[in-house]
Image (cartoon, rainbow, N blue to C red; front, top):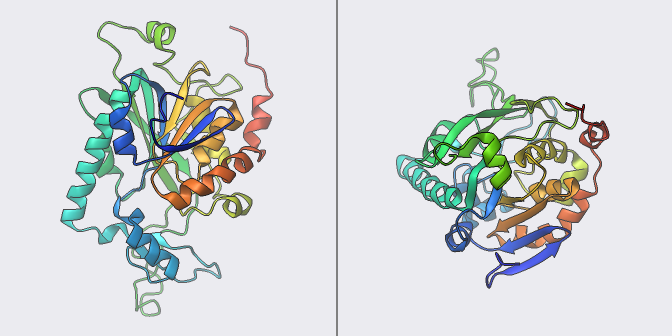
Length: 310
């Protein structure tokens, strides 16, 4: 595989998993190599630094807030994004600006980038993703009930029992971007030349939509991949399916984690490349991709429907 270089890697089906820092790896990639990028980056960058992950594992908190039980439910640690100071926010901006330039160069003209974010930082992240060659094409809203927010004022829960300090989270924003088409080129021409430029319609022939109802990640999937930001296969297969308008090309996840996006691509029969710098998550992906790929979701039932003839 020409994109491995000298990094540790493994091949699973049509996919290649690479243990590398994505900035370093992207800097080596020839321009216009890939058809789409679907990725779930560290929202605030800081929360996936080794010392913060260690604090999370040890239950010491750090940026990972340890929330109380809510309505009888025990909640997992959540990144405390409001704890980011100005220096850290500036670092976040610079990180995504640099990553965006490298990712854009690696995309073919008309290639789409799907970027997961959250309601607190998406305005900052998305503004730093756009550059002279990458245009903002809107947001995809994952409708999902979470345990984020909705708490009563800390240490005054009984005094202000009818108050919540912020809304309960009920959606996850994904930024949708597209590398600009060459001047004068139409979408149809881009599709013929680069297999990019548009989004693949849903398996039933209806247009891909920017609002996708989603459950939280099922326990069966979380038991396979122990990653704090694991997205459900049903949702990811919707996103990844749309990323290649002709069902041809290479999908890349530069923040692979435990490999859930790569597993979605494998389930769809797509070629994919996943890059992960954390050795624990990379090694977990070597077994998780195949197991997650084998999970059947409602998306497979819809795919059995035939596209209507024009």
